[in-house]
Length: 212
Image (tube, rainbow, N blue to C red; front, side, top):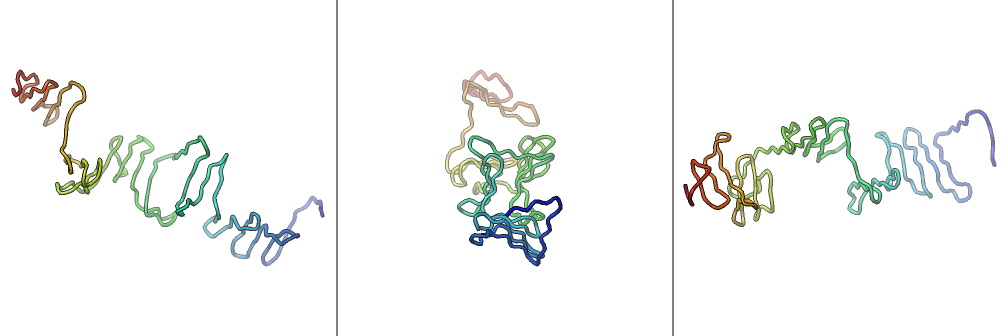
């Protein structure tokens, strides 16, 4: 039955439970001092909470972007076919772990400056394009304390603020082309050079023999 009117419609009750007449399938359930729940095909999908909303299932945005749980109950963000995921901020970007709530967002693991674009790991004040800060050093026993690790702790290369170390194999320095290797101290002062032809110079950048 259809009823037309020009005024407002008020439905009052201790709780409101809207259902389909034919089989009792729920549409909306509103409870006093509690949730308002929306149903799809008889299953609760969206409910208001004291913090905001609670969604059962996944959220679909735009032309098929999805937010929800994956098969391992992790939060998943998936773009529609052929489209990208864009993270943006009007200022800086923080990537954190160990968050417990919206107001307790955990520990900063990576930071991107909104003004410079510099990326910081271990710092929120990166001074270069990529700035990694760690209080530990390699220590010459294993590579577990390296700031940057290439490979594994048992077979790789570790780098910290003033050390480069290899474990599990030899360490090689070289040039692909016929170019020199320069060793400098105190700024731009050249102390030793290995020329592309193999000659080594100490105190000269033009060695005339194997060692000059």
